[in-house]
Length: 217
Image (cartoon, rainbow, N blue to C red; front, side, top):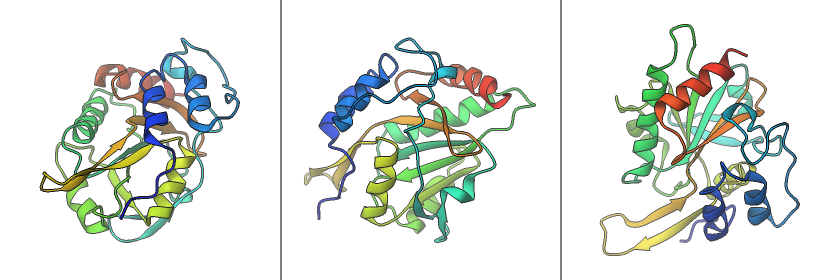
């Protein structure tokens, strides 16, 4: 059965490749609406001025322990969010390893943000599968996996302007894979976007430098 999707991957993925250059153009391409307003910066905005109040919103999902959670459970501390899936062969694990390396590069007085992996593959990513996956020693120690019904995943992906699509691969053992945008979203204590990181746009040292600036504010 084909997964519901929040936004067509072909319209969403291409703009996300240039998000660090012009996020407003991305949002037009994704939604067909007028660009959202930024709080600061512009096409050359630094990591500390990538704040878009329209990105992010409420959700109801299930964590790797089978417990239903909402965004309210993560308020009170900054949270770093990544959309991916456990069968992802390289991009997702590479990104999660990069996050762990960034956290290790933070100054000793800076506590890493909470870290969420929201699955775009709820058919295979059961709570049990996520529990095994997030326990990897290579990933952030505080990584929490979230899954849900296809409708719940589509809803939260829509809140973050995330595109994803199921790609059939009958020749492979997995039978299908998931194309998806690869961004990291840093939410503040009140669940407002503070910044984002494009997967191909940053390295762990740069991410650590930006996080240190933002988490000290």
